[in-house]
Length: 143
Image 1 (tube, helix red, strand yellow):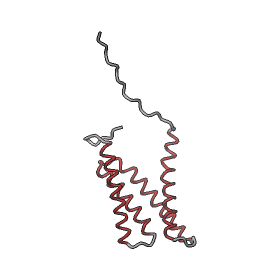
Image 2 (image 1 turned 180 degrees about the vertical axis):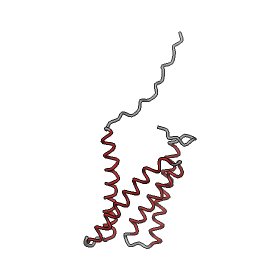
Image 3 (image 1 turned 180 degrees about the horizontal axis):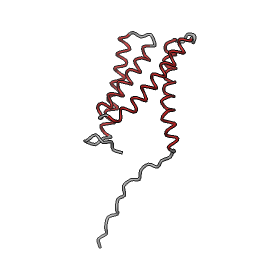
Image 4 (image 1 turned 60 degrees about the vertical axis):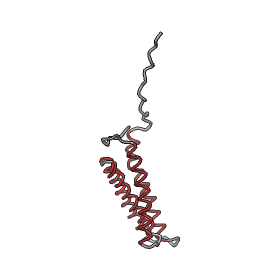
């Protein structure tokens, strides 16, 4: 006697664990936290273990504000772009951010440029691979 094959069900979407309010709060909290960590990192590299000065604190806060604004801009703009430009935009952001932090250590401009290009190359390769494997041929994200 023939039996029909069991019907395959589409996998259920991931359950929503957090409320919309939590997502709205985290949309601001994560960039601000990353900016403050980045600003502290810039200030710490700039003073090279010396005393904390007012200019050093100012450099840290200005760097934090700039990083946060750029991060939020890239985060809102990048998903609207095709995968190549999406990866390239995050690559430019990561390379510039790392290059600025590295330049605060007192390294030469050439050394800072080479290090930031190396970081940018790794970021581009990993992000392009991720976006390429998570989109269909038309560039629509696979959820």
